[in-house]
Length: 116
Image (cartoon, rainbow, N blue to C red; front, top):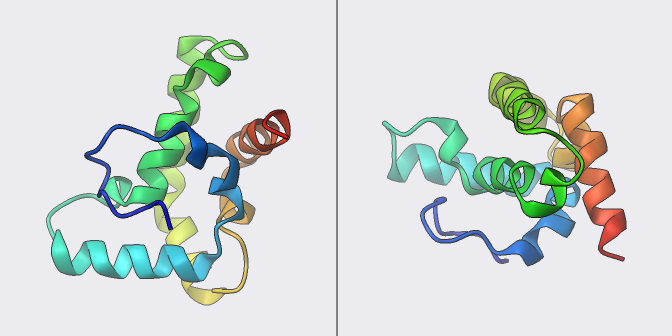
């Protein structure tokens, strides 16, 4: 896996393609590890969420959405984190992208298609 930097290292643009396809079981592992290792950090610092947020502000998305639109998407992502975590905990075989807010999910799917 490419993940593991706890969101502190520079974002690897090669990660964008697979973000929405990550299994919930992996996100569950990331959340559990983050809660053990960094109990005071917000869940938005979990690598998967951090990388998704960084992808929303990447150059590819900047050509598709204005900065205020991207900020709104980031806010939607942040607000959805507890629900995403809960849904993934209940459904570890599902994909993380299935539980993203619809506008974020559509955009992430577009990033994956654009890389093929």
